[in-house]
Structure formats: structure tokens, C-alpha cells
Image (cartoon, rainbow, N blue to C red; front, side, top):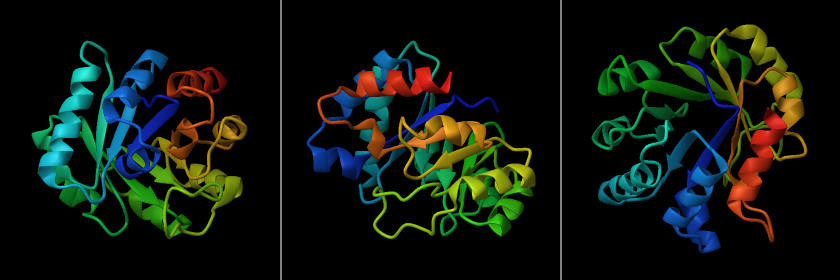
Length: 208
């Protein structure tokens, strides 16, 4: 699959903490030209997740944007999203594939060389690796893999690589240089005194 260099992750908990409405945030991403979005809601009820998914589809109507849902392949199908992203403790890529079918996207998170090797043998469409740098978006983050870990991962798979964890506008270019096809950004989409549109546009410009 062809991945946009910017993979914007909309985290429901972070939006709530910052008092930002989903629709307003999504409108800013659309205005910036973002075309790859994951919606992540670890605690929401299924009906709330589906309502948020419908909101995103409505905001981006008419634009060729890929939508990925975190953790829940069943809801990804109901929401008519393009795919699902699973972690190491979620459904396996093959089980997720059985739910969403052959034509949707499956992504998987990895944190070690062995996990990258295992993911490479699955039907996953892309592999996420991280955290590349220290991150504040998870309560109990995995150990930092660094740019060296990302570079090793690049040698272990031919699948598209998404780098995640602590990525900012300052370090994003070095992440692409180390072998990532795309950078996933969560907290760094927020910047004091800047709109999400401006921040996302900056990322897209930096990433080419």
C-alpha cells in the first residue's frame, strides 16, 4: 500500500483532555490536506466510536482519505472504514483479517526486532514501529527503540513502515531518513498558539 508520509492519529482521550471537539479538529486536518487518519478511542462505547467515525466520514466527504480504526475490526467494518490497527495484545493480524476481509487494511504495532520479523510473515499491510523517541501519549509506553531500532526494522521487512512515538516537526525528517515510510503523530498535532491545520501543514511540508 502507498502510505501518506503523515499518519494523523486522533486520540479521543487527548481531545477530551484538551477540550477540543472532534469535528473542529477533523476540519483542521482536512484543510491541511491530511489523507491518512486513525481514530483511537480505548474506552468509548461502541455507539460512541461509530458516531465519531460517522463524523469523520462526513467532514472528509469528497476527499480521498484513508480511515483506520484502532483495535476494533468489527467496528471498522460497521463504520465502513478502510482498515484497522491492532497491537501486540489485540487480535492477531490474521484474526483481524478474518473480520474485515481481504480488501481492507490491517496495521500492527511492533516494539522489537522479533515482533517486526513476526509481523512481516503476516498479511498485515503495514508495520508500525516504536516508540522512536520518548512519548507522553501512552501511560505505560514500551522501551524506546530509537532511530537505530527503526533502521534495523527497515532491514527486516519490505512492508511499509510507520514510525510512532515522540515524533515532532523537529525530528520527523530524521525519522524518514532512517527508513520510515510514514510518521504517526498524536500529541505533536497540538501546539500552543497554533491551529492543527498549521501544524499538520508544517508536517506535510517537512515530509515532502
